[in-house]
Image (cartoon, rainbow, N blue to C red; front, top):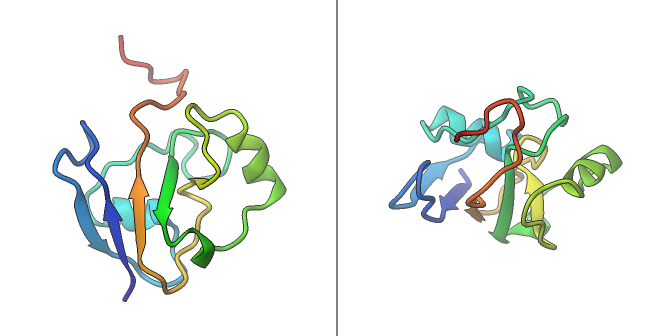
Length: 112
């Protein structure tokens, strides 16, 4: 069973986390199933960037992003070469190290 290491995030997992993922599920699904409340404003329909993550290790073991995901990623805050929408990044079998960016762009739930 592949493991996903989440690097520390100030709100979601301050100490970081290591979770088990099912082959064929998205990074977002695995996180939510394991109690990590990663934001996903569009309910995982690839219509926002709130679930944006940076895959620090294991990026090449994920499915290829499609054109819609790439278009959405262009709008993400802090975009990097290894950025993915966690709702679209499907776990294959490789372990992953994932960083959740400090900020997301979510006009529906911005905290003031």
